[in-house]
Image 1 (cartoon, rainbow, N blue to C red):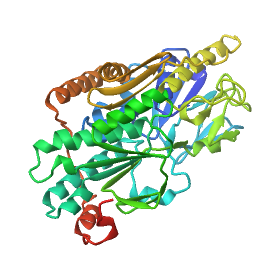
Image 2: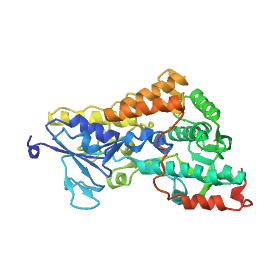
Image 3: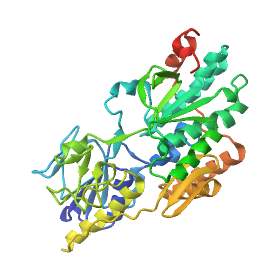
Image 4: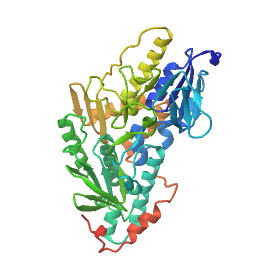
Length: 438
């Protein structure tokens, strides 16, 4: 195939939207270039399992090049796009010359949003990348190791206190997984650490967790978390996040590891597109294109797509991104055949979230369920959406092994970068305010 004679489609972002789009255009009479800052596609819904030692990074990530190794019309570049030159129809890289396009699809995803409290980044962990997950895992595991050496029971409890901020799916899953890790897995391997001393606190400003779900399922998820020993606090506001503490409504909670699992915002490239923004997301037309340029599309977390004028935009979740990607792939091909574009219509297949072992909630239309059956449904869907047969097989085997044995095989500390800060908590005087159990 002589690619120089075919329209050039540049796709920015190798997440759910970008990968799905490039796959849909593979083998077509188009030259496709997929650009991402990383060399891998990441299955973000399972990042929390890497963070809590249930899976290894390679189980939920696939090299993008390997996905398209047999697709000669798809080229993969590892680079960062920082701007778009609409007049020259080029994407601008952070380093090196730009790249021309005939069609541009921007699906660069989102990043953690601290809502103006950027100083809190230094004392908490978001969960958007493999690096984030590995850092959380090492921090949690190091806290257990440090607690094993601690002789003061009050300080040991502080070292085993973990705070998760945000009651969405990520926060609920993280809180449940950390509690299970300590109460079921670690108790077999440690002699001094007492599972009853492990404290996981989930903070949510709203009056319930899992706001997208029906209130009855939110209440069921809260009960399931509490069965796992998670302390769920609703209707509270975080006022400060510092060095091993979280301040909430005037109360200071000790925290060996703080996970920030509330709120995301589009990456900076969204503002560089020169299009209207709504809460940081790029406002798009009914065909997912920009008003100023119908050959530029924005998908996924970056896009503000409202099915009805003035209505609520579609959420930044994987099903939305993947359906938009398939639609745009068809729209580009319709353009090339001289056909009129259609309007994107999202088919809502529901929500699901896992709370822990045999615990989950699921909502699909009028169907609402919680417990073991919902958990099996969650397992099935997540295995199906993983990229690559190897990853599906490995994750399935890992889950079966963990279910039968209560063990997790990825409890590795590769870097001891968190020792210094944890030792500082370990060595604080018992009369310090932070060392009083809240």
